[in-house]
Structure formats: structure tokens, C-alpha cells
Amino acid sequence: MTKTGSRQQQSDEKRARSDGPRDLTTVLSSPPETLTIAEYQRFAGKTDRTAEKAGHDLDFLLLGLFGEAGSLLSELKKKQRDADSYLGYEASVVEELGDVLWYFANMASRAGIDLAELGSRLVGSPSDAAQHLALSDLHPVSSATEAIPQANFESTLIRLAGEVGKLTADFGAGRLSRSHDVLPGYMESIFRALIDAANDAAVSLAHAAHGNLEKIFDRWPLERVHPSLFDEADDFAEQLPRRIEMQIFERTINDQTYVFLRCNDINIGDRLTDNKLEKDDYRFHDVFHLAYAAILGWSPVMRALFRVKRKSRPEIDESEDGARAILIEEGVSTWIFNHAEPLNFFENLTSVDYGLLKAVRELVKGYEAEQCPLWLWEEAILKGYEMFRALQLHRRGLIVADLNERTITFEELPA
Picture (cartoon, rainbow, N blue to C red):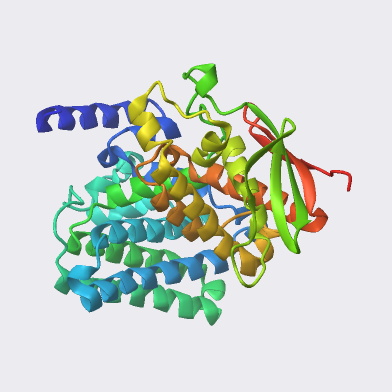
């Protein structure tokens, strides 16, 4: 698309917003430059999962805002310390700015502050046009691809952290509760510092906010709709079995305990040990591959075990179903296990931390599993560890993976 065409599309979309609010799908599929302040505040508020419990309290969000401002400073510190060896700096700045915006927008919502009106005051636009003010209208930067100058950025970030710090100190001292009318002034100062930081970093706030919406709804969607199975259009003989009933059990042979897999009265794969001096039950880990197959519709390991590689598509057979993909999946399984063990294998947890999910997404980058939303990865991980804990307890069981229903369940096996 030409620049003229792009500007025309953005102009058309801005005019369309006057006809009514856009839905999330439209917002995310539109250029970041068309995202309004009002839209961002509205959609960010839909993922504030603490709102019902916290009511109008600002404690959690203020701590989050303070922490994210510190994270921005940390990114700058790492770049200065590691110089050229620190890659991904620009992307990190954009993501961290988006996180700051999320906490800032939800703080404003809880305090009853309209960010669009606040933004219109900062740029001197007419108040009656505030609800159509785009984030890209707040500052001149239009691209997040330019090099980031550090000198001005450093001082602006320190000013941003200082403004957030003053708000946090006054909140902790109870001065805000005694005088609610001072909060808008603090928010205006922080918003101005945010805009200045984006300018000095040559980063578009619109790109940061748009990316933040993509990120948060990847993790907490408004509606959880399972994507199609990766092999849905393939021949039946090259599809993962849509229902897998796998017996997983221990057996001791010559004083060595192994785990066996058995499906349809046939032993599947090799018998397994923990492959570690300190026993940790990793020998049951094939249940994770079953969970990936059931929930994600992805498991090169299970494809190899059931001999359902997509041979009719040589490029897919080599890249998605080959040895490297299998090693990637085994690596994901091991990496998550090392994270899960000190957390009692996620027992009594209903979520997985974002850092873990983000790392998993990086590990499968370039493979079809990269397309799986983060909420689906979270579900696959938690269900897999629910099955793992049941096997730990009973030392044997029947695992039923239903790919059509996207479920995995445990049934006890008689001793």
C-alpha cells in the first residue's frame, strides 16, 4: 500500500469511528495509528481482572505502574551496560511502554478520569473531539523502527519515574484519600512524561498501545475460541489420532523402574527413566506431549510415535514433523518442568506467569505452534501438569486425549 493509500485508509477509519464504537477485532486489524485513546482505555479495562475485588482502590495498579516505570529504566540500563550485545532493545521499550500505558489507563478508569479528555487538554484539541482523538495525535513520532537516542530518553524516563514516585508517596501517606481533586493533576503530569518519553525514544505510543492490546487479549481473550487443528485439512492417515487412550504405568525390571506407554494393547515408544541422579518423576513426561496434542493440536513427538507424519507434504514433514521440531518440543517440556518443580508442579495454581508463556512462544518461534495463543498454551501446560500430578500419586493411569473436544482426562488403572 502506498503512503497516500495508507493515509486515506486511516482517514476513512477515523471517520468511521464517528458512526459508533469499533469492536476489538476491527481495532486489532486496523493500523495502530487509528487507535483512539478512548478505545484503548475501554479495551484495557476489559482485562483488569482485579477490578471486581479492588473496586476503586488504586493500590495494585499504582504498584504495577511504579514497577513498569522501573522496568523501562531497567531496559535503558541493560542497553548501556551491554551495548551491542543486548539485542531486541527497541522491541522491549515498545512492550514496556505498552505495559505502563495499561496500568496508567486502568488507574484512570478506577479514578473516573477520562484519558481522552486528558489527552485533548495536553495537545490543545477541542474537547468535543476528545473521544475521536487518536494516540498518534499526541506526538509526532509515526514509526517504531527508528534508532533510539539514549541521552534525552534517559532524563525523560527519570522524570517519568519521578512523577510516578511522587504519586506513590502521596498515596502511601494518605494525601490522595484526603484530597481526591489532586489526582488528575498527577495523572496529567505522568501522561505528559509518557508522551515525552515516546518522543525521545522515537517510539509510537500508538504502536505501543496497539501491541499491548494484542498481547493482553492473546493471554486473556474476551471469548476463548479454539483455533482449527493444524492437520485438519490433511489426509486421515496423516492426522494425529482424534482420540488417544494411553496407559502410562511403572514397572520394575532388574531393580530399575521404568515407565511404559501402551495404546491399543501395543507398547508405544521406549521405556523411560528420569535420566537424572536425583529422581523427580520426569519419566512420566510423555503426558505433557499428550496434553500438547489434545489442547494445542500440536505434538511432533506424538506424530513420530503414532507414525502420522505429513509425508504427502514434504516441506511440512521436514520442518514441522522432523527431528528438529521433536527436539524443540522436548526442550519446551524440559524447560517448563524445571520451572514447575519448585512450584509443586503448578498445584492449586490457575494461571502461569507471563514470562514463562512468552519464553515458550520464543522457543517454538518459526514452527506452527507459534500460532497458538498464549491462553491456549497456558491451558495445555496446566492440564498437562494436572495429569502429571495424578500419575505421580497413583503411579499408573489411563490418559484420554480428545483432540476434537480439546480435553485430556485421567482415569485410574487397577494395580
